[in-house]
Image (cartoon, rainbow, N blue to C red; front, side):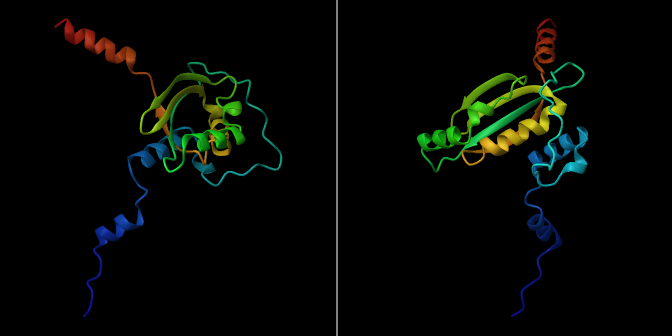
Length: 161
């Protein structure tokens, strides 16, 4: 008996399971920040780039980035913390000059940290997390902006009607 060929729609869905809202947002962020040409595996360059540690966030160059640190629930917390210590996570993160806007524990997920940093330091933050957080955490990154003043102003305007 001959099997029917899979439809084009199901074949397309099988070939692109990674294409979801999170990945589309990350691709957009990379494109906006002008890093589209650098989307390859990151390796340590033969000669390190000039340090950007002196760059400080200003209204003209700052981006906010929310990082989800999803802990590996198959391992006990003591084991995860020991690995973070061995890999130097808390020594390296957050790097000097990067502002921590918020740092929360989200029960059942892990930790959620929002940073404010110059766009030029995005790669540095990414590399620190690759080298010190991976293994204990699965990371997700989201470009973020402060909506509080706008949201509160809209609320106040609606209340006065």
